[in-house]
Amino acid sequence: MQRNPEKRQEEAAAEGGGAVSGGGALMTEHGRGEETTKEVVAAEAAHPYAFHVSGPRNLTSPNWRDLLNSSWKDGNYKRTVIACFIQSIYLLELDRQENRDEAHALAPKWWIPFKYKLSQTLIDERDGSIFGAILEWDRSAALADFVLIRPSGAPKVVLALRGTLLKGPTMRRDIEDDLRFLAWESLKGSVRFKTAMEALKSVAERYGSSNVCIAGHSLGAGFALQVGKALAKEGMYVETHLFNPPSVSLAMSFRNIGEKAGFAWKRFKSMLPLGSATKVSSEEGDNAPGSALKNWIPNFSGLKNPGVGLGKWVPHLYVNNSDYICCSYTEHDGIEGANADKENVRPTNGQVAAKLFVMSKGNQKFLEAHGLEQWWSDDLELQLAMHNSKLISRQLKSLYSLPAPRQTQAR
Image 1: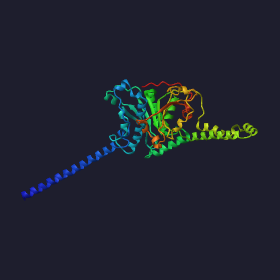
Image 2: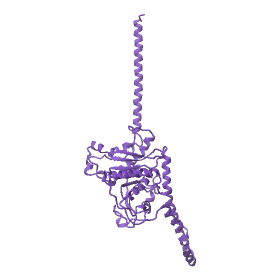
Image 3: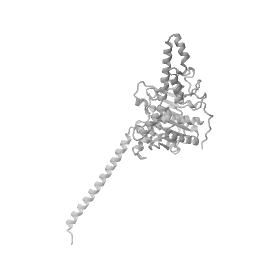
Image 4: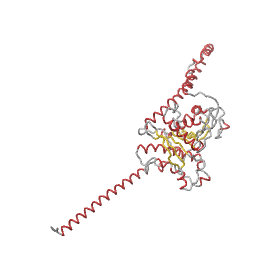
């Protein structure tokens, strides 16, 4: 049976219209997909942790001029870049928690501008979180910008360690290590210490300790300090940068209590009649209030001086006076007047020295004073001293009588 031509035209028109309508629907879905992608890109671009949003200003990538006059020789530049590397470790863990793929990850933007690449991540086996990473000089990226050699002063490898991250499942393990340091002034019992130590020793033996740097912030600075110290005991000295390193500990508090008790006892004894004071003096021995505690505290925290001697390892500490976690580092016994302005002078009292950079902006809120971003701010003003504080000496106590340096050759 033959169909009516007019009917066929109407049916064809209807089919054509349907096809057009279907095509319009597909185009609409595609348009929505593009809009969604643009929204995601825009959201990432405006992310508070994006490098161009919260990163350093007026900072250039290395170029051929660095071959003649390396920016890495500038202490401010080096501090800024290393702080950015540590920030990238925080973001590596956040990228992992928020399931960002490589194309949308925030962390790489914090090392790519400086011609470095991710070589290895350090994983906490307890929860799978990323607490550190090894960043290596990216020769290919440098050659692409006609930078033929690594700028003088730039480390071949940087081991960066983050601090406490109060977000996601890693928070529990971070706080667990915070409490470990608070109680024992040591992090050697943590699995992170072992992992970081093995990684640092491996790259130091592979590239040479003079080409390696370790850095950390907050809890990460505590790990960096003790890992660097442990490696120094083996005769390998790596450049060390510690941002807001923890200084609060129960061991230190107990020592202070013992010292105050001893002072109070002396004051009380001086108020006694002469005869009574003489009798008390002859009988007090180790029974004087505070003396037993003072004698016990060094054994508790392992702070007795095992000998006299100085190593070549001089860590860089960056502290803020308003940060109660690290401000105790600034409580010093005084610096030799004649040598106060000399960076590399060694202390004459047998204590291990450290380059201490102190920032003071008056009263600041804790989060601002303890934050990492302050160390790449444009208006940063620091005071530098070769510091001989009791606290630093205690933290570095086992560096006395260090063995002779062991030469490490790059393979």
